[in-house]
Image 1 (cartoon, helix red, strand yellow):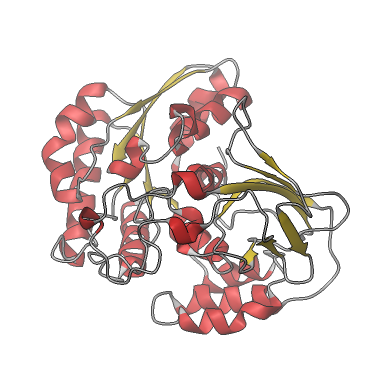
Image 2 (image 1 turned 45 degrees about the horizontal axis):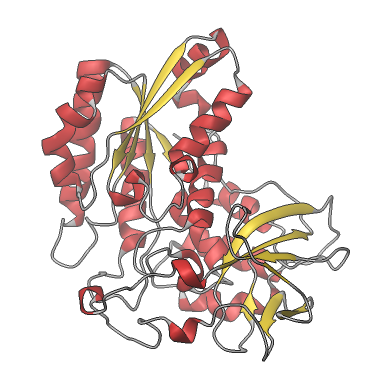
Length: 373
């Protein structure tokens, strides 16, 4: 697998985000992200130039703290009103918030702000607001579900998102089955993120979204996707459960998504994490012959007591294992970080700790889309 730093930098430079004010934020991430990736994000943040066809952002999650501005991931175009609502998927109980009454938009800054009379929830009422180095077990009722607003808007773009190298060369059998209209059984193996932690509906879990998209693209194929994940698991637990959770299900394709629990304080050391992943891959290949996609994951809330603040290292290790074993690699970590440059952790975390909300699951699914199947 070729991972060319200069090509990665070019892709980030084409990210089209126009984040000119974010260069100072990038510097703060220098200790947590690779030099190649950061140099690319800096180029992205400071780039200017002509825009191509506008892109649509749907359901981007935001929490509002009093009347402080809350930034969007991209700079909105002022050619039509933003849509702001209380649910990721609009339904009968959805509240539609109104510009001027509930919020105001600063298009130059790419941000929204609550008005004094706003109906938008105020994150200052969250039990974890203002808490540093918090242990969530001491705060009953923690979570962000009642504090999100979801925003639809258009933004100028010069490129395709996400920034994910195509990996179809490592998924040739999968691609052949899809094109031939054959059955394809996908097993998603990992921790509570993979089980769908904080997704508001089962169909919004990232691997379900991705499988549904494949089914639409290949209508003759018969695609099934099943959960093989267990909340709280590390790669050490995963090795113990591998037979029951993966091998016995006779998969045609396996997604392996660990790292969140491995990286926690006192959990699985980095060298052992790599070895555990390699053992999983070897056993899956030996006993099923199936193809494998490794996914990195995102950093938890930095205010959480039990995070080691070394998720970048675990993400890099996942990428190295993918390269060494010639597996497909889905770069969730760096794509998440690119979006998070302009957003608070609370904007993206369903439990305010380490679970993505519906928009976060969408980020995962878009990275998988970028694999090129």
